[in-house]
Structures are given as C-alpha cells and as structure tokens.
Length: 581
Image 1 (tube, rainbow, N blue to C red):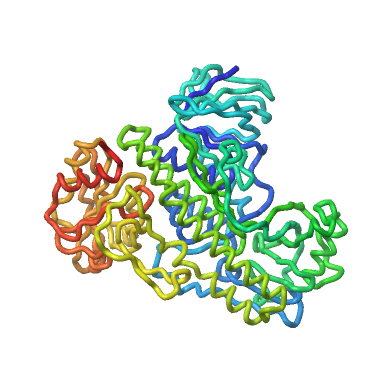
Image 2: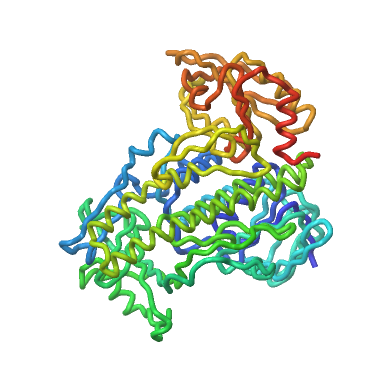
C-alpha cells in the first residue's frame, strides 16, 4: 500500500476545495486534494462571483480569465419576474452597477461554476506544492498524535501523481510511486480541510451537528441548450422568477446554455424520477413561453434548498469549509463566495502554524471569525428566498418582488463590510461603521478586523490599488519617510515572519512615472515605488507616522494612528496576532 506524507489534505474538489489548495500552495505548503468525481462539475450550479471573491481571484492572477469566460455583467446582472420569459407581464430590473464602482478595483461578476472550476483546477495543478487527485475518495480517517491519517481509494486513471523518486509534487514524502485502479493510499497529514459539500461525510464522522430550518424545498435543475437570441435585451437576466408554472430560469452563458429550476413534493409522492425527458422539455418550453421551442436537455440534477450552519467549524486537526460548514439558499449567490473566503481565511493560518511562526491557538480564530460571517450570510440568503416565496404565494405583486430582488442584488455591505473579532485582531478602541442598510451599504474602514479599504494609488507604472499590494505575506502600509521600513526589517529578523512594506506619499499625483526605489533589508520587502495618494492616510484614519498592518487575507490586524515607528511595538503586535508565546 502506498503512503504519502503531506502538510494538508483537502477533501473535496469544488471551488472551495480548489481554492484552499491554491491558497495553501501560494504559502509554500504541501497539499493533496482528493475529489471523488472523475472531473470538474458538469453542472453550472453557482454563477455569481461577489466583489470580494473577484478581489481574491485578482490576487491569484486569474481575474481576466474569469471575465473572459463569464457573461457580460452589463446585460445579465439583472432579475426578471413574470408568467414566462415571453409573457406580457414580464418585468426586469437591473442592479445599480455604478453604485459599487468606488469600493474595489473589481466588481461583482457572473461566471458559471463549471467554467470556474476548470480555471481553479488548472491553477492548483500548476503549483509544484499541490497534488490534485480527481477520481479519489477518502474512505476513512483517524486523528493521531501529530495530525490525521486517512485512507484514499483511487478510482481514476490508476496512477498516483509523484516525481518517481518517492516524493509527492507538493514536497511531502511518499512511499511508493504508483497504485492500480481501485488501490488505496495512506495519507498522513498535519491538518485536514473538509470541503466535501452540504452532505459532508467528514462532518458526519466528526459528529458535528447543523442548525437551521427544515429544507425549504426539494429542487430539480434542468440544464438545457436552446437559442433564445430572439429575446430582446429587456428580457435577458441572470435570474428570472416565473409563476406559470412556478420556476426560475438562469442564464448559464450568454449564448445557448440555460437552466430551469423547479421543484417536487415528496409528501405528495413526487421524486426526481418524475422528471423524464418529456417532462423536462415541457417545463423548459412553458418557462420560455414557446410551445414548439427546439430544446436539448443536457442534464438533470436534484438538490435541496437549505439554510444551515454547522455548530462547529473545527474538531482537532480537522476543519470544515464551504458547504460542509454552511449552506445558503442560492438566492443572492452567497454560498460559493462565503466558502472561498473560508479558504482565504484558513490557509494563511495553517501555513503560519506549519512554518512554526505562529502558535497553535491561531487556528482557533478560524471558527471565531468565519462562523459569525456564515450565520449572517445564510440568514440573508434566507431573507432573499422569502421574497420569492411571498411572490409565488401572491403576498407580493410581481412589481414589488422585482423591486426588492433587484435592490438586494447590491449587497456590498454584506460581502465587504463585515469585521472579524478574534485573537488575530488587535482592537484600537474605535467603533465599527453603522450604516442604515448594512446589507447594501459598505462603509470603508481600516478599523482592525475589517477588510483593508481600496484606494487608488499612483505607482511607477500607473494606477494600483492598495489591495494589489497585499498577500501572501503580512503587509505594512505606512507614510513615506516615517521610518517603518527599518522597523519592519528588524521585526522580520526577530520573528522570522516575512513582511512587505508599502510606503505611500501624500504628495499630489505626478503627471509622469517615477523610478523604482528598490527593497529594504532581509525579510521585509517593498514594492516598486514611490506610491502616491493625497487621500489614503485620511481614508485609513492615520496621522503622521501612523501605520496599518494587514494580514495575508486582506484584513487589518493592527493599526497605529500615529508614530513614531517602532520595531518593538510592531514585533509585540505581530506576536499577539500570531499567538506566539
């Protein structure tokens, strides 16, 4: 039997599992991902990518590829309601795209999950630290004194990825370099991340319960191909809720792929088996409103509409992420995004502990930070679903429903405005923003715990966002000439924690590019500069000599409103953030 040693085992190869592997690899951590499916998803499933997730994809260098693969947001980031897509009562309302423009260097986008998974898988497989095994099922696991031992059965091509010299591509030691199809591999790891979906076998094995209402509906997704080019622009939307019969139509691409979502009632004898090709064709044609529409049914998938959160996100060396930890209704498009941000939060913490630069207590902050966000996200997805239910039951008119649904497509307060409260954040005594509409309205703040605000800077090669300066290391943002680079260099030397320093001048933006100023000493690097913005210090609420320390996941960990620069102060702050004893 083959044996593989790896830092982290990721179970599940959907967007969350793949994102976990990508982010761990970016931190230099050896990771093995196992996914029971032989390939990435054939179904679109999730489609909306929130602003925050697009920022993460931008940091990974695949933002442009996702945009090329996705749908034109100007045309499809809208909601429609009506009896059918062609009915006289159909109305459409688009989100206010320009409303969110100042808050990020990117924006909400639409890219179907089946296409996104291909991009993320390719990215994960391109990293030498990561092995990705599709067609592989974890059949057992047990905690050990130094981690987890798991058994993985390969059902794919019958080979175990390796270098042929006894090591995995991710750098872990492996005994044996191949196995027959159906053979087993023993995987020894320090930590395991379960991203194995809403029916997580890992969560069940750990005995972790979930909280939430009963299932909201037994659903069927019918993916089909049809030419709907005859629909005018005012009937094209990412999502349309239809009443005759009750269903939803989703755009999968901007060409020929679409989905109809409908339901069945088991208590009345309904089941997925009822959805024969004939029934599916009739459902699609009724939704479009064209009885003789040429249609090809591409697939049928049953699923449960749920709103649930696990009671715990960790059990010893095992962590839950994505749908294994929280399941949102699809209305709002939050589920996949919340899971990808789980990965972004957890990966740097695992890396710091594995490298020995942080204490084990840092890992306790994963649940402390992510579970409250998950609870709020799931609740808001449920609120969105209740609007649709009210329309379907006649308690809201179509016009009222569309106005509420379109208004809630703008959710930057939810996806950008949350703040963490844990041992990995050092409070500075300031109060969080309190907007009147915390779902829609995002108020930028550099208060510790919150996402570092986006501010456009002028650099040697043109405009750059403050967010482009961040990750995968801690980043210190400070006024030019305040002495923080020297303090950061000393802190990096004392702690062994790499620090990036970005000095920003408050001078007026120059008309021409400026030269590269190079880097600081060992362990603390600076991006090419100088960087210039006359407003950034005000937006980050810094006085002369102040500084902000941003974590690898883009959230502010510590803020000093004023100087002087101090290696001792910075070192003490970093030690507390990382739970160093």
